[in-house]
Image (cartoon, rainbow, N blue to C red; front, side, top):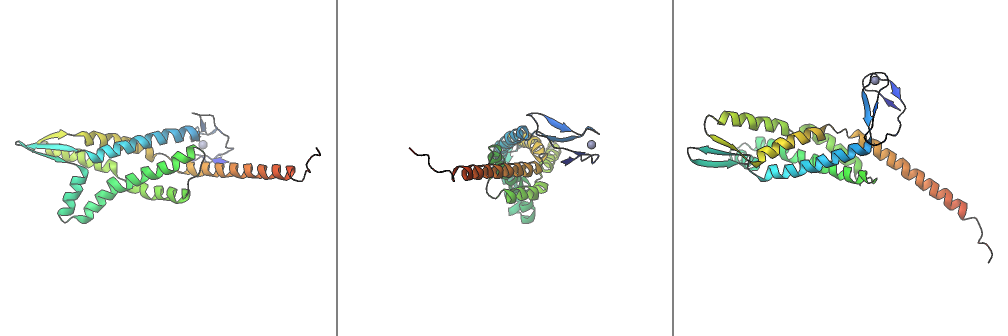
Length: 221
Ligand SMILES: [Zn+2]
C-alpha cells in the first residue's frame, strides 16, 4: 500500500512498466515512477556529474587581466589562499561544502546505484544511504556558483575577467547536482526490500524442491 503525499488517499502499489508513473486517483499527484528507469536516469546523471566535478576541480575558474598582469584562480587555489591568510575555519567550510560533501554524495550514490541496478545489494547498504542523507544538506555547490558569479560582476570594473573551463564545468555541475538532489533515496530502500523478499522466496522454493527430491529412493537399474 502507498499513501498519497497530497491527500493521504491509500492506494494498492502495483508494479509499473518502464517509463510509467503512478498517479493518485483522487488528486492526480505523482505517487511514484518506475524504479528501473529512474535508477538508469540518476546513475547516468551522477556519472556525468562526477566527470564534470573532476573537470571543475582541475582547471582554473577565471583569469584576471589587470593592466597586463594576468592571474588565474581555481577552487583549490582559493582554499589554499584562505588557509594561508589565517582563515582556516572558512577554508575548511568551503572545502567541505564544495569538494568533500558533494564528492562523498556522488561516490556513495554510485556505490549503491550501480549494484542495485543489477539486482545486488552492496555491503554496508544502510550505512551508505545514511551517509547520503547526512551529507546532502551540506553540499552547497549552488551557493558557491552564485558567489562566483557575484564576484565576477564586481571584478569587471577593476580588471578584465576571462571565464575559464572550470566556470562552465561548475555551471553544468550545479544543474546536474540539482537533478541528483531530487532523487529520493527512499526508492532504494523499497528496491532493497523487494530484492530481499525475492531472494527469500527463491531460497524457500529451492529448499522445498530439495526436500521433495531427497526422500525419493534411487530407481532400480
Ligand atoms: Zn492524492
